[in-house]
Amino acid sequence: MKKLTLLTALLLSGSAFAQFATTDANANFGQKQVVTLEKTTTFNLSGKALNVGDYMPSMQLVTSDLKPFDTSTETNSVKIYNVLTSVDTPVCIQQAIDLSKFVADNKAELKGIEFLAISADTPFAQQRFQKNHKLTNITYLSDSSKHQFGMKTGSQIEELGLLTRSIIVTDKNNKVIYTQRVPELTTIPDLQAAVKIAQANL
Image (cartoon, rainbow, N blue to C red; front, side, top):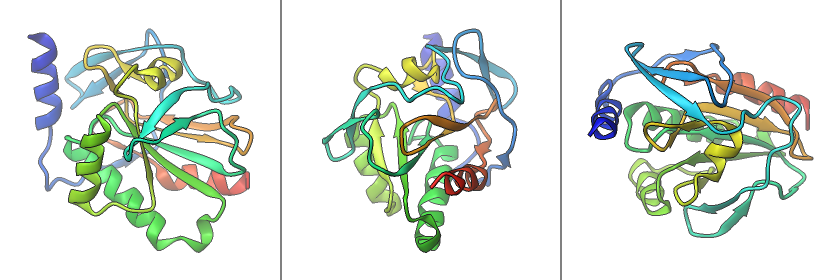
C-alpha cells in the first residue's frame, strides 16, 4: 500500500502543462543516498554507486523495439544516457521532449554523440510514449526486467523500482566522464552541460 501511495504521488506531481526547472544541483548515486519529491517525500536509492572515472558496467538491456543492448559495447561514440524516472510522469515528458527537440535542432554539432534514454518502463510503454509525443533521434532502453541499470549504477529508487532522474556521459571507451543526479525529482538535469563535456571528448 505504501508503494502504491508513493507511486501515485509521483505520477500526480505537477501537471501535464507545468514547466519544470532545469537545475545544476548534483548528488551521488547508490546506497545511503536519497532523492526527494516536491521536497516533502523522501525516497532511498539502492545499488552500487557509479562515479566519474568508472567504466560503465556491462548490462543487458532491451531497446523499445525489443533489440538487445549491451552497455559495455564500444561503438566509437560518446554516449549520453538520459535517465528518466517513468514515462508516465509530467517531468519525464518534458525531459524527453526537450531532449528530442535539442538533438533535432543541433544535429550538425552533435555528430559522434549517441543519445540514449533509459527508464524502468516496459519496452511497450516506451513505444507508446515515443509515438504519443513524436519523439525521434533517441534510442530508448528498458530496465524493466532485472533492474540491472538501476542496481549497477546506484540509480534505483528502492521504494518504487524506478530510476532516479539523471544524466550519465561515457567516452568512446565507455569510461564515465560526467554524471548529474538531481536531488529533487521535479527538476531536470542540465543537458547542455552534459553535451559540452561530450563534445570535449569526441
